[in-house]
Length: 288
Image (tube, rainbow, N blue to C red; front, side, top):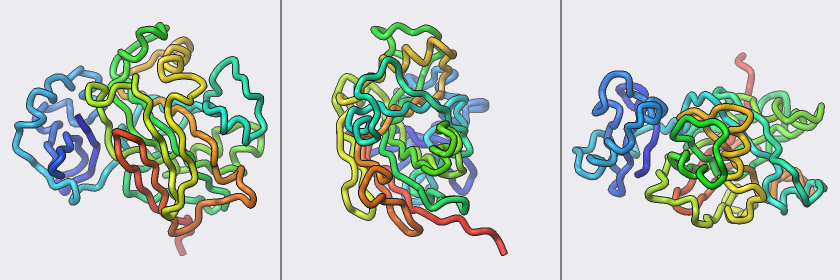
Protein backbone atom coordinates (compact mmCIF):
# COMPACT_ATOMS: atom_id res chain seq x y z
CA UNK A 1 0.00 0.00 0.00
CA UNK A 2 0.88 3.63 -0.42
CA UNK A 3 -0.20 5.68 2.60
CA UNK A 4 0.04 9.46 2.75
CA UNK A 5 -0.65 12.20 5.27
CA UNK A 6 -2.39 15.23 3.79
CA UNK A 7 -4.33 18.39 4.32
CA UNK A 8 -7.77 18.55 2.64
CA UNK A 9 -10.61 21.04 2.81
CA UNK A 10 -11.83 19.05 5.83
CA UNK A 11 -8.51 19.32 7.65
CA UNK A 12 -5.55 16.99 8.18
CA UNK A 13 -5.92 13.28 7.52
CA UNK A 14 -4.26 10.24 6.03
CA UNK A 15 -5.27 7.69 3.47
CA UNK A 16 -4.49 5.13 0.82
CA UNK A 17 -3.18 6.38 -2.52
CA UNK A 18 -4.39 4.29 -5.44
CA UNK A 19 -2.96 3.94 -8.93
CA UNK A 20 -5.83 5.88 -10.51
CA UNK A 21 -4.95 9.00 -8.49
CA UNK A 22 -7.76 8.61 -5.98
CA UNK A 23 -7.29 8.58 -2.22
CA UNK A 24 -9.29 6.66 0.36
CA UNK A 25 -9.68 8.46 3.69
CA UNK A 26 -8.36 5.81 6.08
CA UNK A 27 -8.65 7.90 9.21
CA UNK A 28 -12.39 8.45 8.76
CA UNK A 29 -13.00 4.74 8.23
CA UNK A 30 -10.95 3.69 11.24
CA UNK A 31 -12.92 6.00 13.50
CA UNK A 32 -12.18 8.25 16.48
CA UNK A 33 -8.67 8.11 17.88
CA UNK A 34 -7.11 6.95 14.62
CA UNK A 35 -7.00 10.06 12.49
CA UNK A 36 -3.28 9.96 11.79
CA UNK A 37 -0.93 7.45 10.22
CA UNK A 38 1.09 7.42 13.42
CA UNK A 39 -2.04 6.46 15.40
CA UNK A 40 -2.84 3.70 12.90
CA UNK A 41 0.66 2.30 13.40
CA UNK A 42 0.37 2.55 17.18
CA UNK A 43 -2.91 0.62 17.05
CA UNK A 44 -1.64 -1.92 14.50
CA UNK A 45 -4.44 -1.03 12.06
CA UNK A 46 -2.53 -1.39 8.78
CA UNK A 47 -3.71 -5.00 8.22
CA UNK A 48 -7.29 -3.77 8.57
CA UNK A 49 -6.69 -0.97 6.07
CA UNK A 50 -5.21 -3.45 3.60
CA UNK A 51 -8.47 -5.43 3.57
CA UNK A 52 -10.46 -2.58 2.00
CA UNK A 53 -7.73 -0.43 0.45
CA UNK A 54 -8.59 -1.49 -3.11
CA UNK A 55 -12.37 -1.82 -2.78
CA UNK A 56 -13.49 1.17 -0.70
CA UNK A 57 -15.04 4.15 -2.50
CA UNK A 58 -12.58 6.96 -3.11
CA UNK A 59 -12.84 10.13 -1.03
CA UNK A 60 -10.33 12.51 -2.59
CA UNK A 61 -8.52 13.38 -5.78
CA UNK A 62 -4.80 13.21 -5.06
CA UNK A 63 -4.18 16.35 -7.12
CA UNK A 64 -6.43 18.38 -4.81
CA UNK A 65 -4.67 17.43 -1.58
CA UNK A 66 -1.74 19.18 0.08
CA UNK A 67 0.75 16.51 1.17
CA UNK A 68 2.10 16.67 4.69
CA UNK A 69 5.29 14.94 5.86
CA UNK A 70 4.56 11.21 5.85
CA UNK A 71 4.60 11.23 9.66
CA UNK A 72 3.94 14.87 10.57
CA UNK A 73 4.71 14.53 14.29
CA UNK A 74 6.98 11.54 14.88
CA UNK A 75 8.21 10.92 18.36
CA UNK A 76 11.76 10.60 17.05
CA UNK A 77 13.54 11.42 13.80
CA UNK A 78 16.87 9.62 14.05
CA UNK A 79 19.25 10.54 11.23
CA UNK A 80 22.39 8.75 10.12
CA UNK A 81 25.46 10.50 8.75
CA UNK A 82 28.28 9.27 6.52
CA UNK A 83 26.59 5.97 5.68
CA UNK A 84 27.85 5.66 2.10
CA UNK A 85 31.54 5.19 1.28
CA UNK A 86 31.50 7.79 -1.52
CA UNK A 87 30.17 10.42 0.88
CA UNK A 88 32.79 9.54 3.50
CA UNK A 89 35.57 9.84 0.93
CA UNK A 90 34.39 13.17 -0.51
CA UNK A 91 34.31 14.57 3.02
CA UNK A 92 37.82 13.23 3.74
CA UNK A 93 36.59 10.93 6.49
CA UNK A 94 38.17 7.56 7.20
CA UNK A 95 36.57 4.89 4.99
CA UNK A 96 35.99 2.60 7.96
CA UNK A 97 33.34 3.29 10.56
CA UNK A 98 32.98 1.39 13.82
CA UNK A 99 29.44 2.65 14.44
CA UNK A 100 26.87 4.84 12.66
CA UNK A 101 27.09 8.61 13.13
CA UNK A 102 23.76 9.66 14.67
CA UNK A 103 21.96 12.97 15.06
CA UNK A 104 18.33 13.96 15.65
CA UNK A 105 15.84 16.14 13.81
CA UNK A 106 12.79 17.79 15.34
CA UNK A 107 9.32 17.55 13.71
CA UNK A 108 9.23 21.32 13.04
CA UNK A 109 12.14 20.87 10.62
CA UNK A 110 10.03 18.78 8.22
CA UNK A 111 8.03 19.72 5.13
CA UNK A 112 5.89 17.56 2.86
CA UNK A 113 6.10 16.71 -0.83
CA UNK A 114 5.37 19.78 -2.94
CA UNK A 115 6.09 22.20 -0.12
CA UNK A 116 8.93 24.69 -0.05
CA UNK A 117 12.27 23.88 1.52
CA UNK A 118 13.18 27.14 3.27
CA UNK A 119 16.70 28.57 3.17
CA UNK A 120 16.93 30.61 6.39
CA UNK A 121 17.94 34.25 6.43
CA UNK A 122 20.98 33.32 8.55
CA UNK A 123 22.71 31.42 5.73
CA UNK A 124 23.02 30.85 2.00
CA UNK A 125 24.78 27.49 2.40
CA UNK A 126 21.76 25.21 1.95
CA UNK A 127 22.64 21.76 0.60
CA UNK A 128 20.65 18.79 -0.72
CA UNK A 129 20.88 15.22 0.61
CA UNK A 130 18.86 12.40 -0.95
CA UNK A 131 18.07 9.71 1.58
CA UNK A 132 15.83 6.74 2.35
CA UNK A 133 13.48 7.15 5.31
CA UNK A 134 12.37 4.09 7.26
CA UNK A 135 9.18 4.26 9.36
CA UNK A 136 8.97 2.00 12.40
CA UNK A 137 5.77 0.01 12.84
CA UNK A 138 6.25 -1.67 16.23
CA UNK A 139 7.62 -0.85 19.64
CA UNK A 140 11.01 -2.40 20.29
CA UNK A 141 14.19 -2.26 22.32
CA UNK A 142 17.46 -4.14 21.76
CA UNK A 143 16.24 -5.58 18.49
CA UNK A 144 18.44 -8.28 16.95
CA UNK A 145 19.82 -7.54 13.48
CA UNK A 146 18.34 -10.80 12.18
CA UNK A 147 14.82 -9.72 13.22
CA UNK A 148 15.06 -5.98 12.68
CA UNK A 149 13.28 -5.71 9.32
CA UNK A 150 10.13 -7.05 11.02
CA UNK A 151 9.91 -3.71 12.83
CA UNK A 152 9.61 -1.69 9.61
CA UNK A 153 6.18 -0.48 8.47
CA UNK A 154 7.46 0.98 5.21
CA UNK A 155 9.81 3.41 3.53
CA UNK A 156 9.74 6.79 1.87
CA UNK A 157 12.07 9.38 0.35
CA UNK A 158 13.75 12.10 2.37
CA UNK A 159 15.75 15.22 1.54
CA UNK A 160 17.89 15.90 4.58
CA UNK A 161 18.63 19.46 3.42
CA UNK A 162 21.40 20.94 5.52
CA UNK A 163 22.47 24.45 6.44
CA UNK A 164 26.16 23.66 6.16
CA UNK A 165 27.80 26.61 7.90
CA UNK A 166 25.57 26.07 10.94
CA UNK A 167 26.24 22.33 10.76
CA UNK A 168 30.01 22.77 10.83
CA UNK A 169 30.37 25.84 13.06
CA UNK A 170 31.00 23.91 16.27
CA UNK A 171 31.48 20.39 14.94
CA UNK A 172 27.95 19.41 16.00
CA UNK A 173 25.46 18.72 13.25
CA UNK A 174 22.12 19.40 14.93
CA UNK A 175 21.94 23.19 14.37
CA UNK A 176 22.36 22.83 10.62
CA UNK A 177 19.78 20.05 10.43
CA UNK A 178 16.90 21.61 12.34
CA UNK A 179 15.96 24.91 10.75
CA UNK A 180 12.20 24.87 10.02
CA UNK A 181 11.06 23.32 6.75
CA UNK A 182 14.40 21.87 5.66
CA UNK A 183 13.77 18.11 5.93
CA UNK A 184 11.47 17.11 3.07
CA UNK A 185 9.64 13.80 3.65
CA UNK A 186 7.37 12.05 1.16
CA UNK A 187 5.43 11.77 -0.98
CA UNK A 188 4.04 8.70 0.82
CA UNK A 189 4.89 5.58 2.74
CA UNK A 190 5.18 2.35 0.76
CA UNK A 191 4.59 -0.65 3.01
CA UNK A 192 7.05 -3.49 3.09
CA UNK A 193 4.60 -6.02 1.68
CA UNK A 194 4.73 -4.03 -1.54
CA UNK A 195 8.39 -3.02 -1.36
CA UNK A 196 10.56 -5.49 0.60
CA UNK A 197 13.71 -4.03 2.13
CA UNK A 198 15.68 -7.03 0.95
CA UNK A 199 15.74 -5.38 -2.51
CA UNK A 200 18.46 -2.97 -3.59
CA UNK A 201 16.76 0.31 -4.53
CA UNK A 202 18.18 3.13 -6.63
CA UNK A 203 18.34 6.60 -5.08
CA UNK A 204 18.74 9.74 -7.21
CA UNK A 205 18.80 13.48 -6.52
CA UNK A 206 18.25 16.15 -9.17
CA UNK A 207 18.42 19.94 -8.88
CA UNK A 208 16.60 21.80 -11.66
CA UNK A 209 16.66 18.59 -13.69
CA UNK A 210 20.42 18.04 -13.35
CA UNK A 211 21.45 14.80 -11.68
CA UNK A 212 23.57 15.42 -8.59
CA UNK A 213 23.50 12.12 -6.71
CA UNK A 214 22.96 8.51 -7.76
CA UNK A 215 23.46 5.40 -5.69
CA UNK A 216 21.62 2.32 -4.43
CA UNK A 217 20.70 1.10 -0.99
CA UNK A 218 22.95 -1.94 -1.01
CA UNK A 219 25.89 0.48 -0.87
CA UNK A 220 24.99 1.62 2.63
CA UNK A 221 27.81 0.95 5.07
CA UNK A 222 25.31 0.07 7.81
CA UNK A 223 22.17 -1.66 6.50
CA UNK A 224 18.66 -0.77 7.60
CA UNK A 225 18.64 -3.85 9.86
CA UNK A 226 21.95 -2.86 11.45
CA UNK A 227 20.74 0.70 12.00
CA UNK A 228 17.53 -0.46 13.69
CA UNK A 229 19.46 -2.81 15.95
CA UNK A 230 22.01 -0.14 16.87
CA UNK A 231 19.49 2.64 17.51
CA UNK A 232 17.16 0.39 19.50
CA UNK A 233 20.03 -0.42 21.84
CA UNK A 234 20.26 3.12 23.20
CA UNK A 235 16.58 4.11 22.89
CA UNK A 236 13.19 2.45 22.52
CA UNK A 237 11.80 2.64 18.99
CA UNK A 238 8.09 3.44 18.84
CA UNK A 239 5.49 3.18 16.05
CA UNK A 240 5.83 6.18 13.77
CA UNK A 241 9.47 6.86 14.60
CA UNK A 242 11.56 7.70 11.54
CA UNK A 243 15.10 6.61 10.71
CA UNK A 244 16.76 8.61 7.93
CA UNK A 245 19.52 6.38 6.63
CA UNK A 246 22.21 8.66 5.17
CA UNK A 247 23.10 10.26 1.86
CA UNK A 248 25.43 9.08 -0.91
CA UNK A 249 28.23 11.10 -2.50
CA UNK A 250 27.69 14.15 -4.68
CA UNK A 251 26.42 16.69 -2.15
CA UNK A 252 26.72 20.35 -3.04
CA UNK A 253 29.27 21.38 -0.42
CA UNK A 254 31.82 18.88 -1.74
CA UNK A 255 31.68 20.16 -5.33
CA UNK A 256 34.12 22.67 -6.79
CA UNK A 257 32.78 25.27 -6.68
CA UNK A 258 30.13 24.36 -4.09
CA UNK A 259 26.55 24.08 -5.33
CA UNK A 260 24.07 25.66 -2.91
CA UNK A 261 20.30 25.58 -3.23
CA UNK A 262 18.86 28.95 -4.27
CA UNK A 263 15.49 30.63 -4.25
CA UNK A 264 13.30 29.07 -6.96
CA UNK A 265 15.29 25.86 -7.39
CA UNK A 266 13.44 22.56 -7.77
CA UNK A 267 14.90 19.56 -5.94
CA UNK A 268 13.82 15.99 -6.63
CA UNK A 269 14.67 12.86 -4.67
CA UNK A 270 13.67 9.74 -6.57
CA UNK A 271 13.58 6.45 -4.71
CA UNK A 272 12.90 3.29 -6.70
CA UNK A 273 9.58 1.72 -5.79
CA UNK A 274 8.40 4.85 -4.00
CA UNK A 275 8.45 7.68 -6.53
CA UNK A 276 9.63 11.27 -6.62
CA UNK A 277 9.76 13.67 -3.69
CA UNK A 278 9.70 17.12 -5.29
CA UNK A 279 10.16 20.45 -3.50
CA UNK A 280 10.83 24.02 -4.45
CA UNK A 281 13.35 26.15 -2.57
CA UNK A 282 12.36 29.46 -1.02
CA UNK A 283 14.69 31.99 0.54
CA UNK A 284 13.28 33.17 3.86
CA UNK A 285 12.47 36.85 4.07
CA UNK A 286 11.58 38.80 7.18
CA UNK A 287 8.13 40.37 7.21
CA UNK A 288 8.10 44.12 6.63
